Length: 199
Length: 199
Image (cartoon, rainbow over all chains, first blue to last red; front, side, top):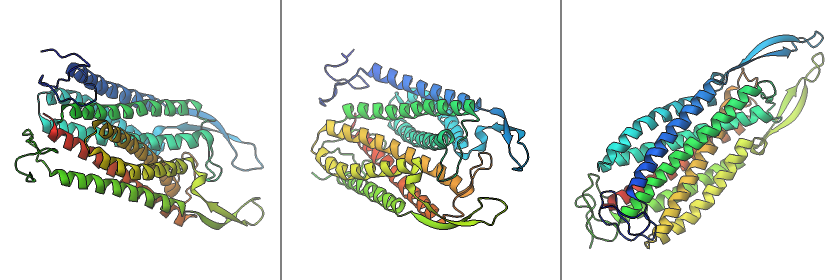
């Protein structure tokens, strides 16, 4: 019994839904969207991990040790492991990547009708979203001072020296923010679907 | 027709619910919890705003201008406006506070049965949660370097000079994180309620 996409609503197990005022999507479309979004979350977190992991940069920097003597060239490195916010960002993205992979399987299992499993998925999606947005906010805040510096705090900008490292950090945060937004959309998709099936 | 709290499930409009494996709460309890959580979100964001707004601290700091001359005492101030992450944190908490107040009214209105209004509330709750966790992450990341400093970045700690300011920032971030978690619980409450009413 195939239902049309935007006319009479039909719920996940094929029975007629209740008129909700909100257009009802085809259950197959909902399933495909859920699968696609979880896959996208996996890809974005994986890309964010790789981009940050490959951000190490080493530069020769002239350092003035004694003001009356000429500057000494020192080899300095920028690594994501040096900043707690980036370590947090990396750990959360690894967890998000692993969770996205596991939830792909669990999501297919939950379609069998287990409400408990579906609820567990929503709770974990919510927690994952919260952690990802926290990590993105933390990394972005450090990245912003790295780019511009802060004269009040007397924290110098870093990106004039480690430009490539900064580009990696910015790209990683942007991709991870897309990943966090994907979890937001996943929760929204579940809520819209539940609302259509509620009476 | 009053329903019992934990035996046979009954939905919002008094009809029999579907066996879900999850115990069904009394609709009144759900309404009270929703109202309580929105009120709590309002209070936490308001407290976070006040605590950060009152964080200004001025200290006399000895500054060495020329190494061969003695240090000069300089009056330095620490304000939340000096750091972009704290400005973002403040703006988001103000938006959260105003939204929590408006959503209290909207939430009562949505009980009349408008699914569109309920969906709008969930979307805004999700966006608010995302913004709050981002802002908390950003403020916490800066706060952490303020407390410990970072030798790799050559960013000195600030909290050994501006201790009171740092205490305000930490307290504000903790309270705001409670507020962000309240939005998470609000979404969870709505999802659990929708799931119980779905078929």
